[in-house]
Length: 444
Image (cartoon, rainbow, N blue to C red; front, side):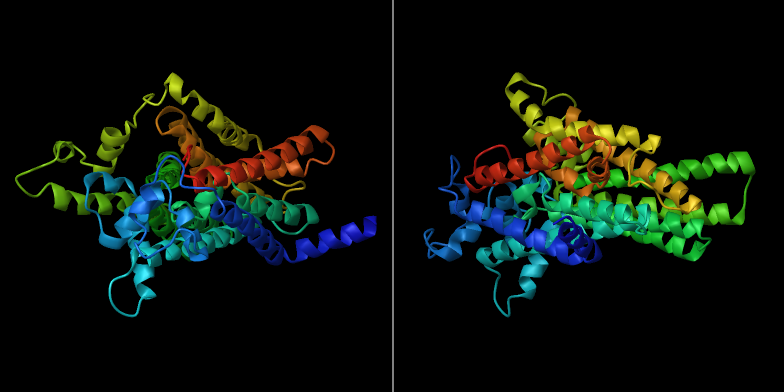
């Protein structure tokens, strides 16, 4: 029996894409069946405002409408007819435009129906989520190695955790989470590739990957505003370059490297600036100007979040929101913990890569990722609607790696037990969340 189990595990490790595909299909079927069979619309019937009159809610084809809940209502409506109201600019410009263009590509003539957009959004989220699972596997492989069985298991477990992420239904519904996850993880992969190329003396590949990473993060920022936090990686490198210049003096390669780092960082900023500029030209060019137009750095996104949703430092810290802090607590703890323990080198498989230079690159890359993740967790705790951390955390790899490290602690039963509890908790939360989502019940 033991040999059969070992053989089975070995097969899975040799074919990670097949294993991840099988897990993804099984998990998506479970979520889809849960959401599609929810008993009703819950306390909010807003979805019915979008449903075409000829569509019967009792027909099998209407199951897709159970995915149009909460922000998905705005996403599909904006994708259909563009931004009409100021508050709609809270929903990522990049995602609504992508959803609109992809939906139009499948319509031969005439306007795109809201039903087609809804179906396209669900399909797009499913595909993007699976692709982001594969990108996470590739990112883990590039940083931690793939030589030993322990390393291969670490890569597979990390990607599998992304499949059953607490984001749950939000990675399948017409939301920006799955697209953001794909773009942000791709950006991290490209950025880490730049560091690896540099350690190998490939300066051309390094510079190209810095620029491509900036583009990926910029597009991710148009989908979700927190994508701008990935610009911290470039800021970190720019500061390092300045310090190196003070210590060692000027050099051609240092100027070249710093130039591409700054260019990549500026590219990330464009992901926020361009949508804001489009909104500024629409709302701030006439005689009737909105209050945010007069700000030193006018931002419709910041204004909408603060004015319509009361987002701000400690504004969410009320007694009535205490249950939401409790729901977010496990994710906040693991994100903050993994960000702080990264410098100790306690994240990753054992033994690490045999190449000493690669170990240094890995630790250097993890330190940069820890900054972005730590800032996100801190902002969720103090400024955002805290419960959304359970879904926006899906695009950050460090906490997956922290849990995967626990899974490989064979000699420490407490570590493996913690991992088992974490996985069970994630799966239970995602399934319960699917019921609440499909029934239009909070938390969103």
